[in-house]
Image (cartoon, rainbow, N blue to C red; front, side):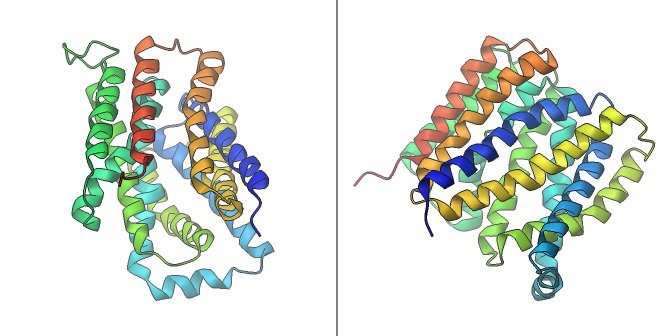
Length: 293
C-alpha cells in the first residue's frame, strides 16, 4: 500500500543516517585502520541483517538465492562492501572528510559514463552538461578552488575517492541484472564479503583493536551506514507514490554532513568545498531532468 507521507519520513530517516557517517568514518579512523574499521562494520552489518532475516523467517532464502547465481553474488560481495569501502576508507584516512565525502557524491555522474559501454545507453546533451559541471565541481574541491594550479593536497587521496565512485557505480550496473529480493541480495553480499575482508585485514593491517572509541565508531558505521539506512531507504521506495520526490531528499545529506563535520570533527569547511558541492548537486539535478520532447 502506497503512503507518500510514510515514505518521506522513512527517507528522511535514511538521509539522517547518511548525514552522520562521514563524521563517524573520520572519528573512527583516528583509532582503527581502514581495514579494521571495515571488518568491524561489516561484521556488525552481517549480524544485524541475519537477525532481521531470522525474525522474518527468511534465512533459508540466502542459500537458495546463492545457489541460483553463486558467481554473481561473490562478485557483488567483492565490489560492495569489500573493494568499495576499502578504497573509500583509505580516501577518508588521507583527505579531510569534507573532500572525500563530496568527491564521492560524483558516483551518479560516473554511473552515466559507465552505462554507455556496459548497458548500451546513450548520453544526452544534458548529461554532458552534468558531467562537465560535476567533475569541474570535483576539481574545485580537490584543488581548494585553485583550478589553474592543479595542485592537490593529496593526489592519491583524491584518486582513491574518485576510484571509489567507479566501484560503486559498477556495483549498481552489476545489480541491473539482479532480479533477487533486495534485502536477500545485500545480505548475501555482506555475508560473502566478510571472509574477504577478514583476509584483507590480516594482510593490510591486524586484529589488534583495543580502542573502545574505534569499536563504537565501527559498530555505528555497520548499523547506520550499512544496514539501517539501506532498510529505511528500501522501505521508503516501496511506500513512495512519487519516487523522484523521495530521491531528491538525498541532496540534504551532504550539506547536513558538512555541519556535523564542522562541529563534531572540528574541520574548517573550505569555501571551495561548498562551491564544488553546489556544482555537483546542480549536476545531479540536471541529470534528473526528463528528456525534452
